[in-house]
Image (cartoon, rainbow, N blue to C red):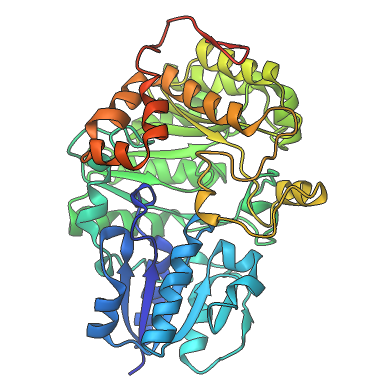
Length: 460
């Protein structure tokens, strides 16, 4: 029997361990369905790939990776090939965009979705670049192999990340994550979805409820975060799903959160979602400047619609969480001021603030490439959106953007600052390792919400 190890890399990247590797769960389940012995090795939970390779003795190693974790993925591939002589495969967003780079480290790169591809590779396909078509009916795929993941680790993510996008969930809840759609109907210039030609596809409501039932009954889950880009689309499916939550009594057993866009919610759908157990909706508002929204191809929504979405959530009794980006092309201090004013005047219940990052394959990447802003050698590990990786903004310096990002973040979330500076273990050791970063955080201590302050021309 062929033995396959599927690896989620990133042994020192705790920030990436909020949700389990559901993508690998789908691939593993499909392999198991076809008689293949599979193990998911997850460095994010502390598993050691060398030790797991020794004990499991795989024939094939499949590695997934996002851009900031690809250095870890390459390290895993090197261990698999050089130390164990294993056949290595890599898939995921980064591999799809930069296959030639990835092929310097692995035997085969998968272009497309991995379920069928990995099964074909097990059955003998050895193409260097193996292209597969997308799965048209998601219900044809078996449910993710939850039993191959460290569910206890991920069900307690709320406790490890008390100030993350999960903070609205109550302490002590057993919080699972799931994704019920693939593809995205939008083409934002900064998003991976802008290059994909796969259409929006969804699990049926019946299949979603089957997965929910399994998570509740088998793992004692009482909260779920749906990671779909916009679970409110298609609208008819969402309404059916909410009604099934209510009819089957799951609105009394668990609470859930999700993501949407401001022009896809209505008072009626939010009211129904609340009745079905929804307690949080996340939005990618990105900016308080309509000029920037238009550039990012978020022009399908307006600043006014975004503000209205927060108001509708408040009226429905649902927590709103909004993310914003600074450092966009042609962005000015006045545009950033508009974002700060939007947050002050709206305001969402929780926010995330990021630095605009040109990921490979996106329209924004092409914009930077045309202007020769992308260096020959890149440190992919800094593509976390927490700092400037490639300066995509031609009007504000990276130093000012990095400072403004932290000022905005901590001004509107002073408790996040306290958590960042004091609540984590080994804080003094980390401060010694990176004193500049530690001092940069400490300077925010006096900056509490409501206290007026101006920095680099932005007034809080």
